[in-house]
Length: 326
Image (tube, rainbow, N blue to C red; front, side, top):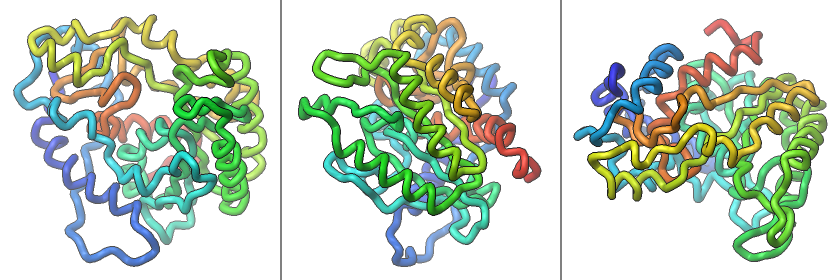
């Protein structure tokens, strides 16, 4: 990154750490012996904010861009086919990350934006000896509202069943920390019927009130801003003009219901973590330092998400004080 060079320490670790994340998605059969991957760097909030502030000044793509434009669209960072519930599935056995024998149970729950944070959270879990269980289903936000299956043009009843299943599992696990995050962009209740911010807030608040009965600490992780264009495709066409692929902060945040997320968390007595400062100044850039930030318009690359493991950890322990000492 400009002022924060990840070309060696971070990029070299990212490939090895990916093996650790994917290994968390294995079944009950013990995995074959493998080399322990080095941890990803724990980058401070000041360093991240400095890199974000300098990003708009960069004009040309760096030669060591990571991930490359050829691979960034596939930079998911975990075995999403195994670890996320399929469209017709109403349940899934969770992938487990970190210390499987730990007495500290953490649950990550949400749609594809929950999985998006696994590369960072798996680093935190390894460092703090947490046992993290992941319950994710793409296009299925956690709010207590029947959403519209936009691919099949029908009510997404499998999503309702999945939420009921996860609620039961959380009631059984009784985690010390529950992290919830969703993608609010363009979610619908019916054909041509977008979910309003008020409906989103009420539905999420209902979910949070229910789950707070079973989890000691509940935190909502804010949604990521949405770009005007998919980062890899736009950057491929504007290698000498990164700014052509930027999006104003106002436009990028208008597409998400972060205020509704924060309001739901407050009304339900849950914590809320805004992620916008880790991504944008007055503009949201698709490249920060030497890292491709997005793998499309609305999902972070696993590489950038993993880079944020330190700032995410700092934010989480503020809501999880009993684990604040490493």
